[in-house]
Structures are given as structure tokens and as C-alpha cells.
Length: 246
Image 1 (cartoon, rainbow, N blue to C red):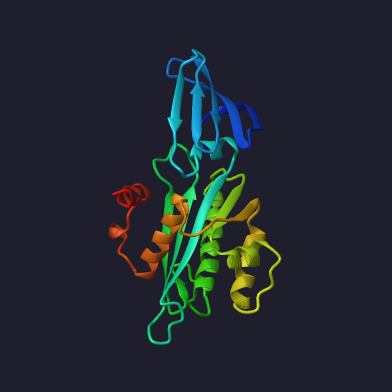
Image 2 (cartoon, rainbow, N blue to C red; image 1 turned 180 degrees about the horizontal axis):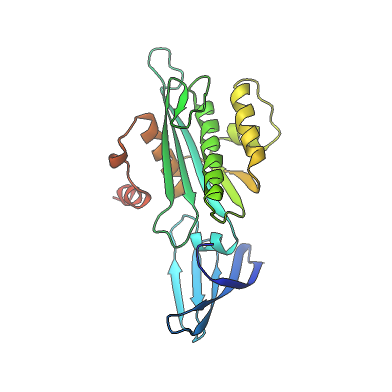
């Protein structure tokens, strides 16, 4: 887990329609004194109480509160695919994928990934899309998210449960639901196979181009991949957020 601490209690409850979660943990300070902290969080608010009853309150933005996710032993991933000039017969389609990983409340910003589709192949992932469209890049984005989870776990990261958010009901329902593909069958089969090999992963639809900052950042990353924006020019989440507020 993000903190090197012994978790000694874990409780969740629903209060007034909002999830409220608490976790107590015990840490040793530099003097060897045991300090117990109780950490409580809703979706957008955090209260940390020490043994001396000192309280720190932190308010988050419209985006999910990462500490809330840590208490619930969960990470969240936002995915998006982009196909600029989608199947326009007069212009080449530019494809990209964006993935945003919220995995630690200690991190200053989420992990982010952007990849480019070249000749209908996701680079450097190597996934063959068959053709570059909005639908195939959305499927590819889920594939990348699953690969990231696999990588974290292989590196020894504690990833108990994962929720993937995407704005493509087509891709999400084909991979995690009961929809049957009428096209892109090979690509769907590859992504579904990988999903079956990565445990404790669920998917949820999120509305595109709304007020979810992580989803909008995933869209920015996907377009950055499609346009082959150099790495040094791609904004971090905090930089992008600041630019959107100007």
C-alpha cells in the first residue's frame, strides 16, 4: 500500500447517499513512539486525526479524492482513444490512446500514458488494430490499461482492485459486458482475453467531454498520441489542469 503502516481497522458506510470510509493505521515516528491516525474520506473530502486530536482537513477538486481510493483499497484508471479524421477517405486517420492512473494519494499527480497508432498498430505496445477508428482506439485504450495493471502487479505493487472508466460504451460493453462484436472481432477477442487474465478489474461508463477532469485529461493524452506530440511537450496532469483554468 502507499503507506508503510499497519492497517488495524477498516470500515465503510453510506451516509446521506455519499460513501464515507475510515481507516485507522499505526506508524512509528523517528523517536520510536507509536502514533495512531484515523483517516476518513468521502469522494471529495479528507479528514486526518492524530492521537492528540489535531485535525487536518483537505478539500479536493471535482476529480476523485485519491486518499478515498486508498482507503477502499482501489485504484482508478481513465482511458480514451482518439481517431483524428475518423475514416475520412480524403485524409489519413491519426490514432492515439491516453491512459490516466490514480494509484496513490501520496503522489502529486496521476501516472499518465499516451501512445500512437501507426499503420493500424499501437506503438510501442504492438497491438494490431486492423483499422484505425474511434472504436478500435477505444478498445486499444482498455488494452493499455490492462497492461499497466499487469505491469504494476509484476513489479510488486499492491493492486487489490481496479476500476477502469471510459466514455465508449461500445468498447466497455464488448470487453466487460455481454455485447457481441459485429466487426473488429479479432481485436475484441484479444482485449477480452487479456481482461480475463487480469483479476479484480471492473469497468464503468463516464460521459465524454463533461466535468470529469481525469477523463478530459485522458482525451488530451489520446490526442497527443494521435498528433505524435513530443514527450517533452506533453503536459502533466497539473500543468494541463492549470492551462484549462486560464
